[in-house]
Length: 196
Image 1 (cartoon, rainbow, N blue to C red):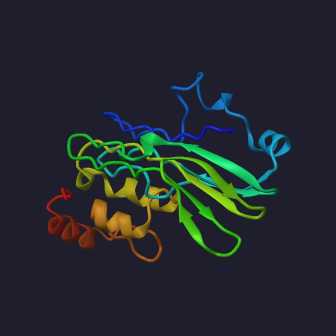
Image 2 (image 1 turned 90 degrees about the horizontal axis):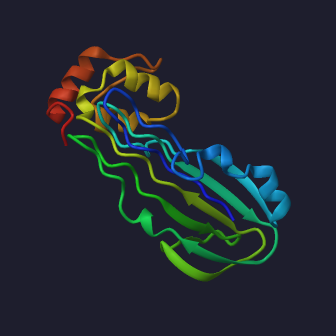
């Protein structure tokens, strides 16, 4: 029914592109948009967004993956073919791996079921929500060498959470989103320069 893409790995001098289909039929612009999907299939797309913290931490950050939630408007049978989500895209030269992909069903009853990467004949009832998360790209270079101002910008843009900024990059921000230089130096020293 649809193809969603993860982030691409970072490269020297540049963060990885987010949620791109660059290697599938010429790019993401060839992928059907939400409205035609909803017109053709008995589904409603509840949300689609970049997956915060899915790009691998690095001097250059990996691109972010996507999370999409699709509500079933009738009973359906689902087949899943996502073998490549088992292994997260690796980082390079001290960069961290991107987050792996996932699939889950949020049942109307409140039960949440994780999907295996390869399944068939999965029954979804009206009102159940299929949630698909694509992988992020791997990072390049040690995260502790990423300029703190870029990490703060990633925080403001919602690409990185405050917890990941501190744990992965060693960057501490104040309540206004500004880099706390002294606390960042201390945190990076404690992390060994961002190498974990």
